[in-house]
Image (cartoon, rainbow, N blue to C red):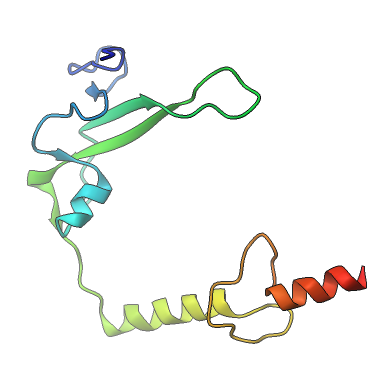
Length: 128
């Protein structure tokens, strides 16, 4: 086990820092808070977890990844979705499903790699 990222006082990294799977009880990431039905509620970051990520092809170095931890005791419940928020969410998703070229709601999110629906992308590729 590596202790490179073990700094509970925060002297080295500025925040209390722990390696993966060694954070103390009472701290959670945003995703873990969400699983508990909670949100950070504006509290500052209490600590962090650091680990080495996968190296990118063609390089020899591995990037350092970080996950920020929040105090569970200061977290608040997730806000409920109101009818207005549901309308805004539906409008946002409708815009992501609508092809900008043919203006048809495709029923799925248009791939950002293509910029249009696959039918319009194929037509544009054949024309070029």
